[in-house]
Image (cartoon, rainbow, N blue to C red; front, side, top):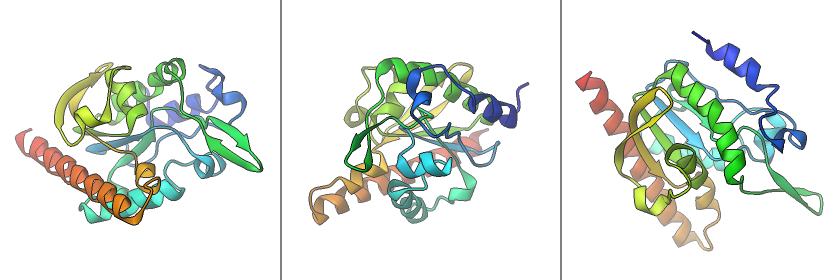
Length: 204
């Protein structure tokens, strides 16, 4: 059986799509290799690309706060992204996130499939539309799945899935009130995920 470290080492030289050409490097998942819960984001951002770790930028700080407020320890979950390379466009001296296309998402699902096969979580939290598309296909819409506990499978992995917004959606809110609503919804969905994972553990 392939170990997590073998997967990470292999992903470091991934050329399955063209995104590797402009990224600093592969940003692979991190966390306990036997975590009961996996959180899947969309793709690395500028800070993640520079540091080589998932969720260490502004959206990561929102996620850390939401995890704490929902009773989930970051150290207890496995964090990864559906796409492992940063896709960006230049605006002045800034690198601005671009959404991965269907081909790039499909190419990188290879790694998510492999990660879930090694970690074998009871539950996966899908953070945003790209993560949802990697799991459910291109017809996925966050609003249709948000906050629901669903059965899903990817490759050999089968388990429970809860979908919610990406933490960056909180930051994009046009005013404090909308940001507060988005954040409260994110925490509510994470509580649903925590309780579903606990229920699955009790039933096993």
